[in-house]
Image (tube, rainbow, N blue to C red):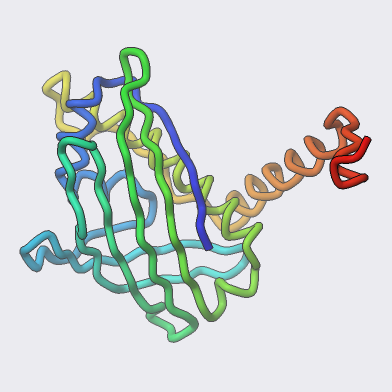
Length: 199
């Protein structure tokens, strides 16, 4: 499934790009993620813990930078792993593009995600909502770490968004789903949606 998301960082694009080229720093921004080994040639071993409703999944696998385009400010990461309990597998191709936005930077992400096993049973809506929540938390953590680095502070001393509990993620995902339903319900009437474009 293809999931698109974006967030803004109140730092110049050059600083954000420099930060994104430090993969261990970037990994620390995503709650539940830890790099365990640098294999060289832009390839890493790591673990990702995530909750999908009541199910907690702990993936172990590899991540590798497939493309780093400094001119276009684009980074492509290919990652795959398996749940340590044997309940599923996941692979993703993440493309992040940095775009100047006023004095700050907009980070546009496109995630091509393939999952099997326990996580797959929740369907596209739940997976998309959980991904959106994680990307929001990632954006907050990235903003805080980049700001700390620019002030000469130790970014590891900056408070990060903690990994959400299963209930916390479920409640936040439910709010996103409810917002989508309400938005559809309150959209102005458009005859073309009913009559195929003939009013």
